[in-house]
Length: 148
Image (cartoon, rainbow, N blue to C red):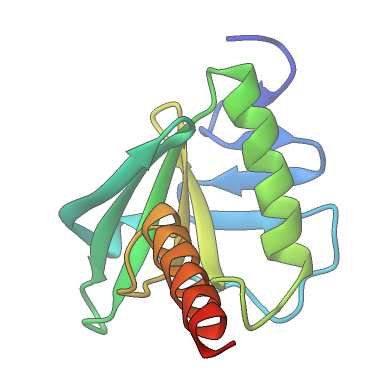
């Protein structure tokens, strides 16, 4: 692993102002709107794979104490490109709250990977949503042309 980040003896990931352990986010370089959830990664049961991409995989997980479902995104910290994209995503998720962004409950570091605990939305992948949007736009344009 490159020396562009630090792993402490206690298994804590430290980089660019973020400090993340197996028990969650300890510090961020950006102002956080609200508190983190104080979830514990050991309280999460992995149910199924939701998808994967260039930067990792996303799984459906269940928070056992509450029964709530969440999306658990797993990203390796060994790859510099993935780590860079992850840090950008963390900055956005920690510093913004917006109706079009899935809220992040917490993040964890374990076994060479960072896990982002995100709100689960059963709407399909972003790729699927974009295809549907393009199809709807094309259909709307076609209807407008037919009306002219």
